[in-house]
Image 1 (cartoon, rainbow, N blue to C red):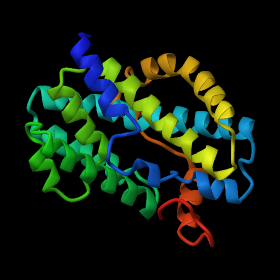
Image 2 (cartoon, rainbow, N blue to C red; image 1 turned 120 degrees about the vertical axis):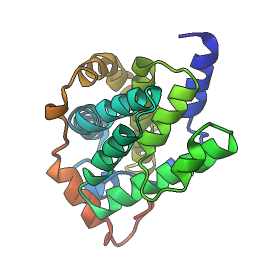
Image 3 (cartoon, rainbow, N blue to C red; image 1 turned 180 degrees about the horizontal axis):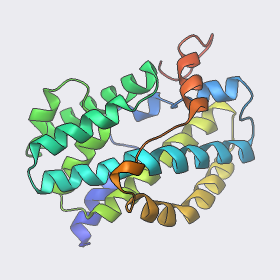
Image 4 (cartoon, one colour; image 1 turned 90 degrees about the horizontal axis):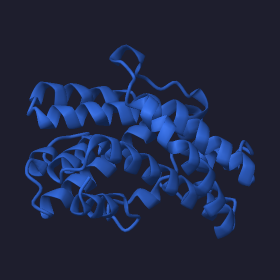
Length: 223
């Protein structure tokens, strides 16, 4: 991976990326409200569990396939895996989150003159991973590094949400990032070797938390 591609990856996974990811907690806010997570250890366990059984089983392998499809200019595969990912979201809130972030990233990519981004911006319900895969392909970011960046970006956003909600101290948040970061490379390696028939996320707790979040009395995060 050359230095320019590495810098572009840093830009793509930065919290400063203006897509509004900070507005979503992916069910974590409701999990805290219900007392499922209420301290540093339980938050770390929640984040690690969702990452292992959702992102590593679904988002990252699909993102890999989307990058390969963009490299081959295979429109049918791009559409197939985009639809597969979006329709795998288990609640209306999770679908809305993915569509909102995907559209925002497509709009940004269009403004940055990423080839093909305008077409994605014109589509309804384009997943974030689809646009992310396109940008990584255009910026010549290798699949492995793109997957690591995608995973770290998601974990960092969850930690930031937990710091606001519990609240956790900044140092506790850094400890969670440190611990989850130690397992990230091996988990991503496993995710990138999954065959098609093993893809899929099954996390009823996250789905329930996300659905219940729509009627949570007081919310910091978008529903």
